[in-house]
Length: 639
Image 1 (cartoon, helix red, strand yellow):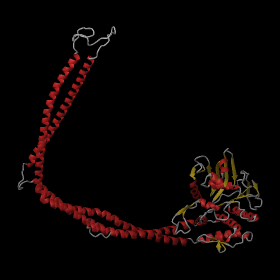
Image 2 (cartoon, one colour; image 1 turned 90 degrees about the vertical axis):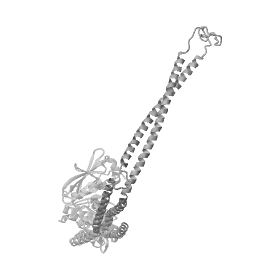
Image 3 (cartoon, rainbow, N blue to C red; image 1 turned 180 degrees about the vertical axis):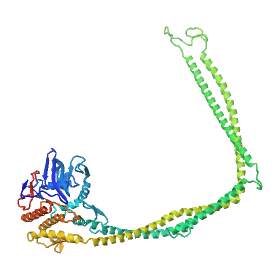
Image 4 (cartoon, rainbow, N blue to C red; image 1 turned 90 degrees about the horizontal axis):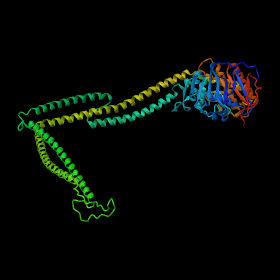
């Protein structure tokens, strides 16, 4: 380290401080850069000596979402295993560590007890800094914006960390609505601007329009639907949801009366069916005869079923006997075949033997010895005769069983026919007795069905009418919300009296800084900040319309100078960053002595206010007149 002036150690006051940056190589060797020895630390060295990379490491540990190669370069990804930043927030120390091993690249470890996803670090930093977590309208006009987006710490970091490629704009690729939100956050009135009624009022006004359109549509459709249902079902007039209660009570009363009438007719019919006295032509023995006929039909059916089983058994037995007879026939045929096999050669001398030479039937034509007939044939023939007799007996039994079955079928059919005839007679008698009651019961049933259908339609009517009530209530609620938000907006406007004062104070600090560079790169007028839309004016025109490239660099140096002075405000509403990261402010052809003077003034302000500035530059820091610490960076990466 090269010390060009006797600085005081960095004061850990309000806001954010970077104490050191650590880079752990794959070999385990650790490179550390300590920023805690002075209010301003200047990183110097030739191109590609990791000056800008060191600031990018800080940015990456604060929740950079890209990969290591995308954010810091492939050389860093290959050489290092982890990166860390030690910080202080309102004097409290924390260590943020990002490791490159598999499964850890998307996480940030804070000290030893907190492990966050990269996307959660911004919310953690806001909480520790005590800055509000807000959602802002996604557009310049809060009234017409239809979406909101979070105001993150990284959005504010783009104003604190002045990258080498953003010295001509507030932040690279930053939308105007986001710039206004960040400035209002720093100045301390973002909550009252974005938690007030502007966005919600626009939403509420759109909801009123939508609710009124729905109400008009529902009003027309419900009236038509209710009229159609009432007319089709013959219901009493239904005007609104309140009248449904009276209609339901009336229908329930009618239903109870009709059901009572039905019960009375049913009881009378039952008494008439039970009594046969005085009924001409009614046979009192008819029920008993029907019962006897039913018993006879059931008995005949059981007997027929039993006989069907007997016939089936006889048929199966006869088929078995027939198969046995066929088997014995095959046996006899086989015996005859083997008896006719001739012996043409003598087994002893092998002389030819003529079976046709003369010999007795009872002797062997080969050896002339006496022989007897084949016993197997006689036994088989005897078995055949016995089985034939059994087959005849089974045929007789089967014929008798079949005859009995036919008779049982005739008895069953006769009994069934008689039972049906008696049942019809009894039914006709009962119908003729109950006929006087049937027409009345049919009329009553029709009336009951009609009333029940009307009652079943009431829930649907209630649902239809409830849509009208809900739509009307939505319109009333939306109107009340618009009125409330309008009153709230008026109250917020009355309570925001110091907004102009804060904007003027920010502009005064910028003008105080720029006054030293009049005709030395700054040839424009005074800076003013509009309290309404936070537009920065130079003279009478917006800054981007009135400044060239050199003046823009001075403009943002002045803006950085003014941000440091937010730490001097005594109130806690101001979100003072307390830190600036300025990457190579030697930009756009601005004279080097002007940049050195600007950096010196910013360093003196940081020393006086107890804040911190980290600057990178290719040249050495000897020309800077303010207290600072210079760190000469090793040349690590070839061009």
